[in-house]
Image (tube, rainbow, N blue to C red; front, side, top):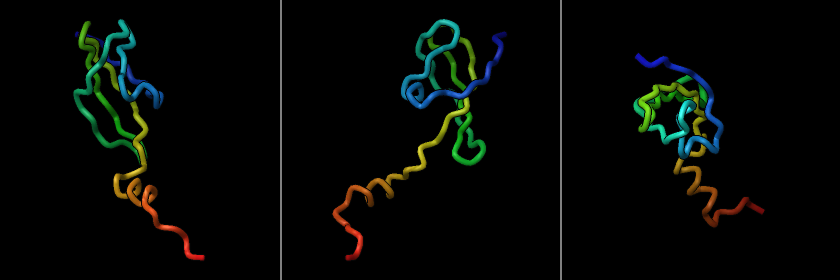
Length: 77
């Protein structure tokens, strides 16, 4: 049985999380909501099978907000 570890992933590591033991790519097995602005991910290594839990900061920018920011709307003058 593998031991489960918990950590917080840096924003640059979210795109391609790595196994803390062998540095191979880890895949997200489960994602659950955590405290405001965070999710808890259960990751499994594709090479050694190590299970790792991580706390991940959620991007607060929704697709609707991105559309608003990139539009031609301007503040009233």
